[in-house]
Image (cartoon, rainbow, N blue to C red):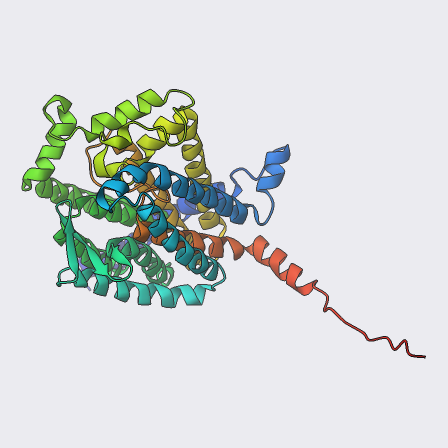
Length: 439
């Protein structure tokens, strides 16, 4: 036997040992992060610590914060859309409000139903939703598709009017990817097992969204993908490689499109911008002061923000009418939702529920941050709505789907599940009796 063959087994063993050590290091890192998130806010003294240690604390935190955001959204759609709606819909100032309420009435029962589903049902819904979303995205390129604001991203389906399939695709992608990755916990360190078919699914949806020229939604979907991969513990080299490719593709898409280049130059040099919406959003926030000019009193919605008053720039109208404290209240609600969503993800013992909760939370938080940064002129205009608050039936329905899944995952946390099961078992059957008083 040669010297080379004598050394090969030792070398292979050393390589396997290094890979095992690397995998254990990543595993400890992820467990340490998740343990920290799971215990965040649960220790200490005082009423807040006691409330956060309650088994159903996360459930109620998501429920209350989401309900308040939805309520604020309805209020702001009424206020912000009234002027634009009167001009574009034959004097009907309540057109967008009624449409928002219709989708809200549809979305609340769906969210409630999703909150009662088991993990096995989420697996089915993830695959079914993925197939359905891809079909809807494909229909955009048929005569049913509709162009608006330079994008072909809408479907006209009567009597619903227009819907935006990419909003539903976000929820479907997250639930589907959670179902896929939950079965690969032992092979997440292998890029080939990690990225197939996960990356293929994201690439299909991302490609169809880019064909619709909706770069803002494509960026949000890409960021969701990175958030999910980071949470499941993907190797750093995978994240860096995908990030580099994504940056190159995004840069090429901006450089080769005159409209996107114009938005970038407008962001860098506001004095040469053709649209004054971004600056008018700053004026709205500035004129709101501490307490605002009063509900319904916004001046910028009368023309300064054009059609964006109730969509991409609804936070500017809110800031003008409710002031700095109104904006801070919205930020606090998003923080509470993010905090509780991450705790749900960290506390869930079921991998699918953990990944789904992390993905839904990342989606809402990322999209909210992008919208807020655009309104505050910290990012170029990308056309991304503010979750729960912006007018848009498709976005509202998709956000409520995310809330329903978060509530369902919160109900299936180990401590919460035990409390709910004990409550069901302690319910005594009601008995009725008939007393004969004729004697």
